[in-house]
Image 1 (tube, protein in one colour):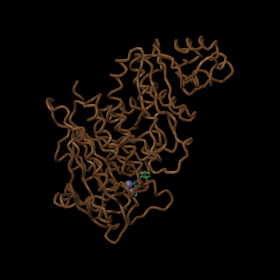
Image 2 (tube, protein in one colour):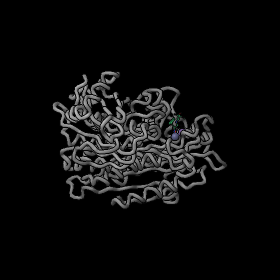
Image 3 (cartoon, rainbow, N blue to C red):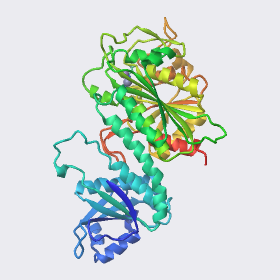
Length: 499
Ligand code: BES
Ligand code: MN
Ligand code: ZN
């Protein structure tokens, strides 16, 4: 789908979209169009349940005296509630409606709305951003789909008086959407296509944007002593990889230390010898969504040339059962020197992150380190699919992440850490074990990670419940969500970026 901005004019063909505020207050464009159509819009509203609420959409088909295919009335809700996220959701709903309706081209007329939190340029840009986010579809493996089952919308034009303002505001958002789409693609790909070697290969594409990409292969990781990460991958035919991505967007910064993102990249998690049940195992292709989000965030930041130094480190492994697989009971030595008794080979993400995070802090001395991982089923039990779990050793960082999540529409909820939980992972024969008890599973997992960060300001985002969705929402079609990309971009913009 193409998105364009133009001066606000009613087109001579295709669809027109105009807004109606809460309590049925028509925007100026709606009023003008209604007049031109001799009151058809007002009559349609009166004959319906349309109230101008944010979920309301009403189409008036083939209005008399025009070549227009339809006028779509979209609810804008209360003007004072019109912020970035509300504008994005409106854009998303418009796209969903037009695709379902079979419309090929449409013009959205954006008006000045007094009391709105956004100027018209920003409103138009956010609406266009939401429209683009919703237009995502992963259909490359569908070869027999009928044309009328495919999304129809080819071009959406946003009509806006402040053309220059809208275009300028949209440019960085469009780059963030590029990052989101890249992540959604990587997470959606099946596990025979995306495995540690091919996912590492994909990251090379970021070099075009000026990101420095480096690989560590198994031999190099062995030399560094990454026994925890390597143990997880040792049952797989595919070679494990650690990928380091660097974007130095603030070479002149006073404090040149980077912000670090670390991602769990288990390209498929069978559970290993502690094998998972068959039902739903196919979902474990998205056990690399943490790494996927780190890759997408790097793409977004480099794409919009963010004035920040960031490093992304992802640990890529495939967790398979085989004759060479690690066993429950094995003891492995991590790069930090700490030993780990592997009680359950399905608690593999923490083993991967232990070495990836140790390496990251050891080499880059980041001012903050944030890891993202589909780490535990327990976090889904705690928070459902509405918040990612946030764990942190630093209140300031935690607050910045909570705020960024809220602003970006990727909300987090803070969970506790503490000595009592930490004790639950002490082992009888090694420094620690990789599982706690049945209780507090996502907390003991976070506690495990904390043993590898020392005093680096650190936060762990358990995104197991957020990486994938079975139902559409305004800006996230069902499937891979790319949860974390918009949040990390926003964190950087609000907290770390040079002005
Ligand atoms: N990748 C899973 C966690 C997961 C579960 C993500 C469901 C998304 C949806 C992780 O590696 C795992 O298997 N965790 C175990 C840990 C347990 C063995 C201590 C879990 O949550 O059951
Ligand atoms: Mn697992
Ligand atoms: Zn896993």
